[in-house]
Image (cartoon, rainbow, N blue to C red; front, side, top):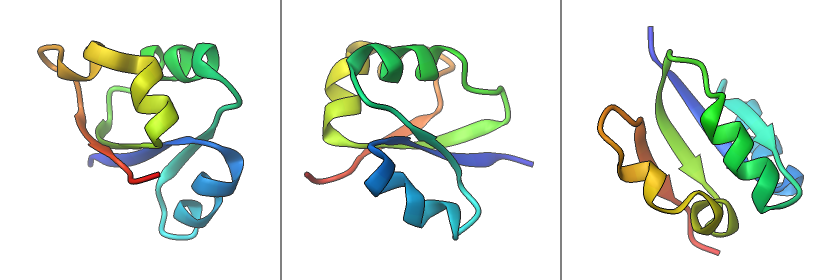
Length: 73
């Protein structure tokens, strides 16, 4: 079974937990990059805050990376 993950500020991710997504609250770019690198292999879709997407950068397009969606700011 595949999972959906959300990476962003605590305020952003809290609502997605109610829908069953794996949520990762991050405070800065470093935490966002570290979280991305340690996502479980079951994660197929990742919703990213604008700040997290900027921090992770081109890694979202790497071969084998989960499908990513940049949320509007």
